[in-house]
Amino acid sequence: MKDGQATRRRLLDAATQEFAAHGIAGARVDRISANAKANKAQLYAYYGDKDGLFDAVFREHADHIVNAVPMTADDLPGYAVRLYDEGVERPELARLAAWTRLERVPVGELVSHMGEQTERKLSAIADAQRDGLVAAALAPEDVLAMVMMMALAWSPISFFYTATKDDPEADHDRRRRALAEMVRRAVSPEPA
Image (cartoon, rainbow, N blue to C red; front, side, top):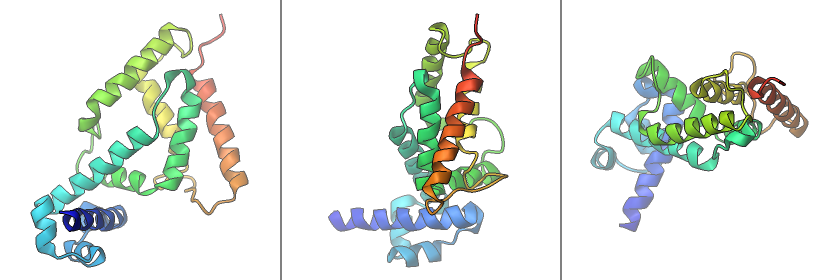
């Protein structure tokens, strides 16, 4: 059993790199198996097919970001900065999300299995709006979408610049400050 878990982990890790680099259609089961030091029969036994493997990879990364970066509606600037840091640390999530959007879910909600977590976030934002901490004129779903996209401004899907762990810490600090300030300004209620 322990060896089976180790093989699954190697397959998920190899598949993460393969899917992030090549997408779903471009990923090759042969490369995944070889990089995982597993045979294709094991991959198919554990995940069914390439699509099942991608689903497992994407779900693992989506679940990780939700658990690693909890949202607090009373500190949306801090949430955005934590998302930025996680995106720098784990750039494959943005790539996997981009491939999912391009190859599977062109419109609508990207991650349907996150419905409960998304609803909790939207409810927390609505509560913060009622408490006067977040602009009430904005729909909670728009607040969440904009905060998340601001945090991804320097991600691998950026139109401007992709940040990496190798960037100077001064650059990361500057981006964190700018991000926090922009989110604060974007969601703050107008003075009475």
